[in-house]
Image 1 (cartoon, rainbow, N blue to C red):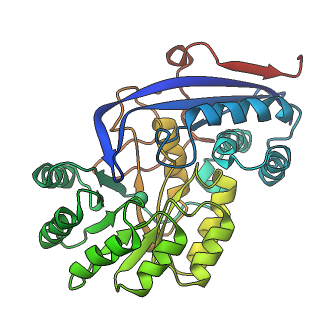
Image 2: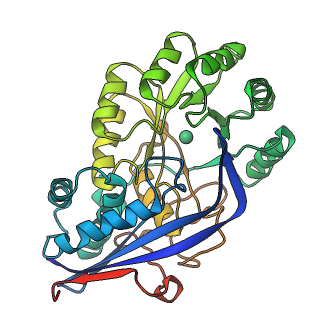
Image 3: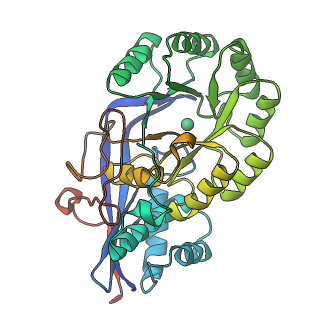
Length: 370
Ligand code: MG
Protein backbone atom coordinates (compact mmCIF):
# COMPACT_ATOMS: atom_id res chain seq x y z
CA UNK A 1 0.00 0.00 0.00
CA UNK A 2 1.25 3.50 -0.83
CA UNK A 3 0.16 6.98 0.22
CA UNK A 4 -1.27 8.56 -2.92
CA UNK A 5 -2.64 11.91 -1.72
CA UNK A 6 -2.75 14.12 1.38
CA UNK A 7 -5.28 16.89 2.07
CA UNK A 8 -5.11 19.42 4.91
CA UNK A 9 -8.12 21.21 6.39
CA UNK A 10 -8.49 23.92 9.00
CA UNK A 11 -11.37 24.41 11.41
CA UNK A 12 -11.89 27.11 14.04
CA UNK A 13 -13.29 25.84 17.35
CA UNK A 14 -14.88 28.62 19.44
CA UNK A 15 -15.10 27.71 23.13
CA UNK A 16 -18.43 27.73 24.99
CA UNK A 17 -16.83 29.78 27.76
CA UNK A 18 -13.27 31.19 27.90
CA UNK A 19 -10.80 28.91 29.69
CA UNK A 20 -8.16 30.35 32.02
CA UNK A 21 -4.84 28.85 33.14
CA UNK A 22 -2.01 30.04 35.38
CA UNK A 23 0.40 32.77 34.20
CA UNK A 24 -2.58 34.78 32.87
CA UNK A 25 -3.28 32.53 29.91
CA UNK A 26 -6.82 32.83 28.54
CA UNK A 27 -8.33 30.93 25.62
CA UNK A 28 -11.47 31.87 23.62
CA UNK A 29 -10.97 29.69 20.57
CA UNK A 30 -8.82 26.85 19.27
CA UNK A 31 -7.69 26.34 15.68
CA UNK A 32 -7.69 22.71 14.62
CA UNK A 33 -6.02 21.09 11.63
CA UNK A 34 -7.20 17.88 9.97
CA UNK A 35 -5.27 15.62 7.64
CA UNK A 36 -6.78 13.11 5.22
CA UNK A 37 -4.36 10.55 3.82
CA UNK A 38 -5.49 8.62 0.74
CA UNK A 39 -3.87 5.40 -0.48
CA UNK A 40 -3.57 3.62 -3.79
CA UNK A 41 -5.83 0.86 -2.40
CA UNK A 42 -8.77 3.20 -1.86
CA UNK A 43 -8.46 3.34 1.95
CA UNK A 44 -8.28 6.77 3.56
CA UNK A 45 -7.28 7.72 7.10
CA UNK A 46 -7.94 10.83 9.18
CA UNK A 47 -5.90 12.66 11.78
CA UNK A 48 -6.40 15.88 13.72
CA UNK A 49 -4.09 18.00 15.86
CA UNK A 50 -5.26 21.06 17.74
CA UNK A 51 -2.80 22.93 19.98
CA UNK A 52 -4.17 24.55 23.15
CA UNK A 53 -3.84 27.99 21.58
CA UNK A 54 -0.32 29.35 21.16
CA UNK A 55 0.74 29.89 24.77
CA UNK A 56 0.21 26.51 26.41
CA UNK A 57 3.02 24.49 24.80
CA UNK A 58 5.71 25.24 22.21
CA UNK A 59 3.11 24.23 19.62
CA UNK A 60 0.82 26.60 17.71
CA UNK A 61 -1.65 26.28 14.80
CA UNK A 62 0.45 28.21 12.25
CA UNK A 63 3.56 26.15 13.04
CA UNK A 64 1.57 22.95 12.84
CA UNK A 65 0.24 23.74 9.38
CA UNK A 66 3.63 24.94 8.08
CA UNK A 67 5.27 21.73 9.32
CA UNK A 68 2.61 19.55 7.70
CA UNK A 69 2.99 21.45 4.41
CA UNK A 70 6.74 20.71 4.60
CA UNK A 71 6.26 17.01 5.31
CA UNK A 72 3.15 16.08 3.31
CA UNK A 73 4.54 16.15 -0.24
CA UNK A 74 7.48 13.96 0.89
CA UNK A 75 5.13 11.31 2.27
CA UNK A 76 3.60 10.48 -1.11
CA UNK A 77 4.65 6.90 -1.96
CA UNK A 78 5.34 5.88 1.68
CA UNK A 79 3.76 2.67 3.00
CA UNK A 80 1.23 3.57 5.76
CA UNK A 81 1.25 -0.01 7.08
CA UNK A 82 4.71 0.59 8.61
CA UNK A 83 4.13 3.21 11.33
CA UNK A 84 7.57 3.01 12.94
CA UNK A 85 9.26 3.41 9.54
CA UNK A 86 7.09 6.39 8.62
CA UNK A 87 7.69 8.06 12.00
CA UNK A 88 11.48 7.64 11.67
CA UNK A 89 11.23 8.95 8.09
CA UNK A 90 9.39 12.05 9.28
CA UNK A 91 12.03 12.64 11.98
CA UNK A 92 14.69 12.37 9.26
CA UNK A 93 13.13 14.88 6.87
CA UNK A 94 12.06 17.46 9.50
CA UNK A 95 13.75 17.97 12.86
CA UNK A 96 11.41 18.45 15.82
CA UNK A 97 7.78 19.60 15.41
CA UNK A 98 6.59 16.20 16.60
CA UNK A 99 3.13 17.56 17.48
CA UNK A 100 2.58 18.19 13.75
CA UNK A 101 3.84 14.72 12.84
CA UNK A 102 1.24 13.30 15.24
CA UNK A 103 -1.50 14.18 12.74
CA UNK A 104 0.15 11.95 10.12
CA UNK A 105 0.67 9.20 12.68
CA UNK A 106 -3.02 9.20 13.73
CA UNK A 107 -4.14 8.94 10.10
CA UNK A 108 -1.76 6.04 9.47
CA UNK A 109 -3.21 4.09 12.41
CA UNK A 110 -6.70 4.79 11.04
CA UNK A 111 -5.62 3.37 7.66
CA UNK A 112 -4.05 0.29 9.26
CA UNK A 113 -7.19 -0.41 11.28
CA UNK A 114 -9.40 -0.11 8.23
CA UNK A 115 -7.06 -2.29 6.14
CA UNK A 116 -7.03 -5.00 8.82
CA UNK A 117 -10.71 -4.52 9.86
CA UNK A 118 -9.67 -3.96 13.50
CA UNK A 119 -10.22 -1.03 15.88
CA UNK A 120 -7.05 0.94 16.63
CA UNK A 121 -7.08 -0.27 20.25
CA UNK A 122 -6.62 -3.84 19.00
CA UNK A 123 -3.55 -2.83 16.98
CA UNK A 124 -2.06 -0.94 19.95
CA UNK A 125 -1.97 -4.01 22.14
CA UNK A 126 -5.57 -4.98 22.77
CA UNK A 127 -8.58 -4.05 24.80
CA UNK A 128 -8.00 -3.89 28.56
CA UNK A 129 -10.77 -4.15 31.15
CA UNK A 130 -10.93 -0.37 31.37
CA UNK A 131 -14.26 1.51 31.10
CA UNK A 132 -12.26 4.65 30.12
CA UNK A 133 -13.34 7.12 32.81
CA UNK A 134 -13.21 10.77 31.83
CA UNK A 135 -11.25 13.41 33.64
CA UNK A 136 -12.85 16.82 34.17
CA UNK A 137 -10.73 19.95 34.27
CA UNK A 138 -11.88 22.78 36.49
CA UNK A 139 -10.50 26.04 35.16
CA UNK A 140 -9.61 29.17 37.09
CA UNK A 141 -12.58 31.15 38.33
CA UNK A 142 -13.94 32.21 41.70
CA UNK A 143 -13.79 29.44 44.29
CA UNK A 144 -17.59 29.19 44.43
CA UNK A 145 -17.75 28.81 40.65
CA UNK A 146 -15.01 26.16 40.65
CA UNK A 147 -16.79 24.21 43.38
CA UNK A 148 -20.11 24.50 41.53
CA UNK A 149 -18.42 23.12 38.41
CA UNK A 150 -17.13 20.14 40.39
CA UNK A 151 -20.66 19.46 41.68
CA UNK A 152 -22.04 19.68 38.15
CA UNK A 153 -19.45 17.25 36.79
CA UNK A 154 -19.93 14.94 39.78
CA UNK A 155 -23.65 14.79 39.00
CA UNK A 156 -22.77 13.91 35.39
CA UNK A 157 -20.80 10.85 36.55
CA UNK A 158 -17.26 12.23 36.71
CA UNK A 159 -14.91 10.96 39.44
CA UNK A 160 -11.53 12.33 38.28
CA UNK A 161 -10.82 16.05 38.45
CA UNK A 162 -7.93 18.29 37.44
CA UNK A 163 -8.40 21.46 39.45
CA UNK A 164 -6.41 24.35 38.02
CA UNK A 165 -4.14 26.37 40.29
CA UNK A 166 -3.01 29.97 39.72
CA UNK A 167 -5.39 32.29 41.59
CA UNK A 168 -2.69 33.35 44.05
CA UNK A 169 -1.01 31.32 46.79
CA UNK A 170 -3.56 31.93 49.55
CA UNK A 171 -6.55 31.39 47.26
CA UNK A 172 -4.98 28.21 45.86
CA UNK A 173 -4.39 26.82 49.37
CA UNK A 174 -8.01 27.63 50.27
CA UNK A 175 -9.26 25.84 47.15
CA UNK A 176 -7.17 22.74 47.88
CA UNK A 177 -8.42 22.54 51.47
CA UNK A 178 -12.05 23.11 50.56
CA UNK A 179 -12.09 20.68 47.63
CA UNK A 180 -10.22 17.97 49.57
CA UNK A 181 -12.65 18.27 52.52
CA UNK A 182 -15.56 17.61 50.16
CA UNK A 183 -13.86 14.75 48.32
CA UNK A 184 -15.93 11.58 48.20
CA UNK A 185 -14.81 7.95 48.25
CA UNK A 186 -13.48 6.79 44.89
CA UNK A 187 -12.76 10.30 43.64
CA UNK A 188 -9.37 11.56 42.48
CA UNK A 189 -8.34 15.21 42.56
CA UNK A 190 -5.17 16.54 40.95
CA UNK A 191 -4.19 20.14 41.64
CA UNK A 192 -2.67 21.31 38.39
CA UNK A 193 -0.53 24.45 38.29
CA UNK A 194 0.29 23.96 34.60
CA UNK A 195 3.85 25.11 35.32
CA UNK A 196 2.62 28.36 36.84
CA UNK A 197 4.51 28.40 40.13
CA UNK A 198 8.13 29.23 40.90
CA UNK A 199 9.84 26.49 42.98
CA UNK A 200 9.46 28.69 46.08
CA UNK A 201 5.74 29.24 45.44
CA UNK A 202 5.14 25.55 44.79
CA UNK A 203 6.96 24.60 47.97
CA UNK A 204 4.94 27.09 50.03
CA UNK A 205 1.56 25.91 48.67
CA UNK A 206 2.37 22.21 48.94
CA UNK A 207 3.77 22.48 52.46
CA UNK A 208 0.73 24.50 53.56
CA UNK A 209 -1.42 21.44 52.82
CA UNK A 210 1.13 18.74 53.66
CA UNK A 211 -1.35 17.20 56.13
CA UNK A 212 -3.72 16.39 53.26
CA UNK A 213 -3.51 13.44 50.85
CA UNK A 214 -3.13 15.43 47.64
CA UNK A 215 -1.46 15.17 44.25
CA UNK A 216 0.02 18.10 42.34
CA UNK A 217 0.58 18.29 38.61
CA UNK A 218 3.36 20.20 36.87
CA UNK A 219 3.91 22.66 39.74
CA UNK A 220 6.72 24.47 37.87
CA UNK A 221 7.65 25.06 34.26
CA UNK A 222 10.67 22.77 33.92
CA UNK A 223 11.42 19.22 34.97
CA UNK A 224 14.44 20.39 36.99
CA UNK A 225 12.28 22.84 38.97
CA UNK A 226 9.66 20.16 39.64
CA UNK A 227 12.39 17.78 40.82
CA UNK A 228 13.76 20.46 43.14
CA UNK A 229 10.28 21.01 44.62
CA UNK A 230 10.00 17.28 45.14
CA UNK A 231 13.02 17.28 47.47
CA UNK A 232 11.29 19.84 49.73
CA UNK A 233 7.72 18.45 49.79
CA UNK A 234 6.00 15.13 50.50
CA UNK A 235 3.04 14.98 48.10
CA UNK A 236 2.64 12.90 44.98
CA UNK A 237 3.62 14.67 41.76
CA UNK A 238 2.27 14.20 38.27
CA UNK A 239 4.35 15.49 35.35
CA UNK A 240 2.67 16.80 32.23
CA UNK A 241 3.88 19.66 30.03
CA UNK A 242 7.63 18.97 30.49
CA UNK A 243 7.30 15.36 29.26
CA UNK A 244 7.72 15.26 25.48
CA UNK A 245 10.20 12.70 24.23
CA UNK A 246 10.62 9.10 25.42
CA UNK A 247 13.95 10.17 26.96
CA UNK A 248 12.09 12.66 29.20
CA UNK A 249 10.03 9.81 30.63
CA UNK A 250 13.10 7.57 31.02
CA UNK A 251 14.86 10.29 33.00
CA UNK A 252 11.86 11.06 35.23
CA UNK A 253 11.23 7.40 36.01
CA UNK A 254 14.93 6.74 36.69
CA UNK A 255 15.00 9.76 39.04
CA UNK A 256 11.78 8.60 40.74
CA UNK A 257 10.63 12.09 39.80
CA UNK A 258 6.88 11.43 39.77
CA UNK A 259 4.08 9.08 40.77
CA UNK A 260 1.89 9.90 37.78
CA UNK A 261 2.35 11.21 34.27
CA UNK A 262 0.04 12.80 31.77
CA UNK A 263 0.49 11.68 28.18
CA UNK A 264 -0.84 14.09 25.58
CA UNK A 265 -0.78 12.07 22.39
CA UNK A 266 -0.15 15.02 20.07
CA UNK A 267 2.54 16.50 22.34
CA UNK A 268 4.56 13.25 22.33
CA UNK A 269 4.29 12.82 18.55
CA UNK A 270 1.37 10.43 18.05
CA UNK A 271 0.29 6.90 18.89
CA UNK A 272 3.48 5.19 17.71
CA UNK A 273 5.65 7.12 20.16
CA UNK A 274 2.97 7.12 22.89
CA UNK A 275 2.83 3.32 22.75
CA UNK A 276 6.48 3.08 23.81
CA UNK A 277 5.93 5.67 26.56
CA UNK A 278 2.87 3.75 27.81
CA UNK A 279 4.82 0.52 28.06
CA UNK A 280 7.73 2.20 29.86
CA UNK A 281 5.39 3.81 32.41
CA UNK A 282 3.50 0.57 33.01
CA UNK A 283 6.81 -1.23 33.61
CA UNK A 284 7.51 1.29 36.37
CA UNK A 285 3.97 1.05 37.85
CA UNK A 286 3.32 4.70 37.07
CA UNK A 287 -0.31 5.82 36.83
CA UNK A 288 -1.43 7.54 33.65
CA UNK A 289 -3.64 10.40 32.62
CA UNK A 290 -4.01 10.95 28.95
CA UNK A 291 -5.62 12.96 26.19
CA UNK A 292 -4.85 14.09 22.67
CA UNK A 293 -4.40 17.83 23.29
CA UNK A 294 -7.40 20.01 22.31
CA UNK A 295 -9.61 19.39 19.25
CA UNK A 296 -12.86 17.75 18.23
CA UNK A 297 -14.39 14.31 18.71
CA UNK A 298 -11.90 13.00 16.13
CA UNK A 299 -9.07 13.68 18.60
CA UNK A 300 -11.11 12.48 21.56
CA UNK A 301 -11.65 9.19 19.75
CA UNK A 302 -7.90 8.70 19.22
CA UNK A 303 -7.48 9.27 22.96
CA UNK A 304 -10.25 6.77 23.75
CA UNK A 305 -8.58 4.03 21.67
CA UNK A 306 -5.26 4.58 23.42
CA UNK A 307 -6.91 4.70 26.86
CA UNK A 308 -8.65 1.41 26.15
CA UNK A 309 -5.24 -0.32 26.04
CA UNK A 310 -4.22 0.81 29.57
CA UNK A 311 -5.14 -1.45 32.53
CA UNK A 312 -7.84 0.11 34.70
CA UNK A 313 -5.62 -0.20 37.81
CA UNK A 314 -3.07 2.21 36.28
CA UNK A 315 -5.54 4.53 34.53
CA UNK A 316 -6.56 7.87 36.06
CA UNK A 317 -8.73 9.27 33.30
CA UNK A 318 -8.92 10.63 29.78
CA UNK A 319 -9.54 14.30 29.18
CA UNK A 320 -11.75 15.26 26.27
CA UNK A 321 -12.32 18.59 24.55
CA UNK A 322 -15.71 17.94 22.92
CA UNK A 323 -17.71 19.50 25.80
CA UNK A 324 -15.78 22.77 25.60
CA UNK A 325 -16.28 23.67 21.93
CA UNK A 326 -19.28 24.83 19.89
CA UNK A 327 -18.36 23.00 16.66
CA UNK A 328 -18.81 19.28 15.98
CA UNK A 329 -17.53 18.07 12.59
CA UNK A 330 -18.76 14.48 13.15
CA UNK A 331 -22.17 14.80 14.82
CA UNK A 332 -23.28 11.73 16.80
CA UNK A 333 -20.14 9.78 15.81
CA UNK A 334 -16.96 8.69 17.61
CA UNK A 335 -16.16 8.42 21.32
CA UNK A 336 -18.78 10.32 23.29
CA UNK A 337 -18.96 10.95 27.02
CA UNK A 338 -21.74 8.93 28.67
CA UNK A 339 -22.08 8.95 32.47
CA UNK A 340 -18.49 10.13 32.89
CA UNK A 341 -16.94 7.51 30.58
CA UNK A 342 -15.69 7.67 27.00
CA UNK A 343 -15.20 4.22 25.42
CA UNK A 344 -13.95 4.09 21.81
CA UNK A 345 -16.17 2.81 18.99
CA UNK A 346 -15.78 -0.90 18.14
CA UNK A 347 -15.27 -0.09 14.47
CA UNK A 348 -12.32 -0.63 12.12
CA UNK A 349 -9.64 2.03 12.42
CA UNK A 350 -10.51 5.19 14.31
CA UNK A 351 -14.23 4.68 13.80
CA UNK A 352 -15.01 8.33 13.12
CA UNK A 353 -14.51 10.72 10.21
CA UNK A 354 -15.30 14.42 9.96
CA UNK A 355 -18.10 15.46 7.64
CA UNK A 356 -16.29 17.01 4.64
CA UNK A 357 -19.11 19.49 4.10
CA UNK A 358 -18.44 20.88 7.60
CA UNK A 359 -14.68 21.23 7.02
CA UNK A 360 -14.92 23.40 3.91
CA UNK A 361 -12.27 23.67 1.20
CA UNK A 362 -8.85 22.13 1.93
CA UNK A 363 -5.93 24.36 2.90
CA UNK A 364 -3.68 22.29 0.63
CA UNK A 365 -3.72 19.06 -1.37
CA UNK A 366 -0.67 16.98 -2.32
CA UNK A 367 -0.67 13.97 -4.67
CA UNK A 368 1.58 11.90 -6.86
CA UNK A 369 0.55 13.86 -9.95
CA UNK A 370 2.37 16.98 -8.74
MG1 MG B 1 -2.02 19.04 33.28
